[in-house]
Amino acid sequence: MNITFPDHPVWLPERIPCPQMADLLSLAPLGRPLTKKFFARSVHEVAPDLIGATLLVDGVGGIIVEVEAYHHTDPAAHSYRGPTPRNMVMFGPPGFLYVYRSYGIHWCMNFVCEKEGSASAVLVRAIEPTHGIAAMRRRRRQQDERMLCSGPGKVCEALAVSNKHNTLVLDAPPIALYARPRKPDIVAGIRIGITKAVELPWRYGLRGSRFLSKPFPG
Image 1 (tube, rainbow, N blue to C red):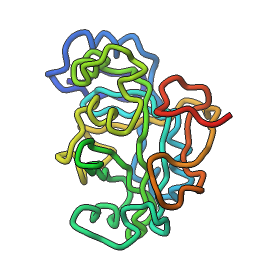
Image 2 (cartoon, helix red, strand yellow):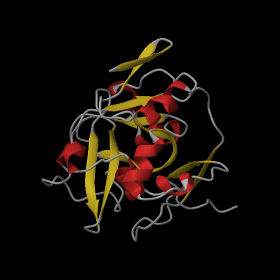
Image 3 (tube, rainbow, N blue to C red):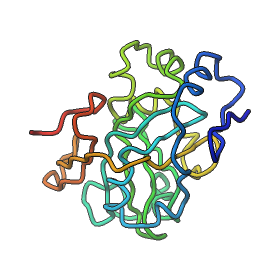
């Protein structure tokens, strides 16, 4: 079904329960839909520009408050040593989803950026839940909204993202991305949970957000 906000529709599947629809109807209008063109830029431009954008998967999601950039010249990037069956989507055109399993436990979602062959991407680390919170709580078995999406694995579990979403386009259902209504106060710092290129300040977040996976220093 379609629930229409001013100027554009937000796509929702029939299976989303009524409480989530009520959540949607109470929200302010979203920004313009983001297209593949948005991602056809330097990963270092795209990453901070995603802070404040809204990510929905099957109508469930929220405001992106934390991301990390990974470039093909970066030893911490999955693409650093070249294409493999797992990371092949990173070497394709921008605007596609790259989903991988972390430590054999959690799924993590990334947005492929830059021109075809660059193999650079942005990891979604945390979002502020706004849409379909009841579904997130059920999937995460967690009531505290601050804990629903405060980490890349939590984001995927809350949004029910798995390997079946790998290689999907970012500007068509079930995925929807909407531009932030205004530029937020963004903070940068070093990335988390890596052992290579640890000095690079390629982690970006919404300053003061209580939904971050980990606070930024200072």
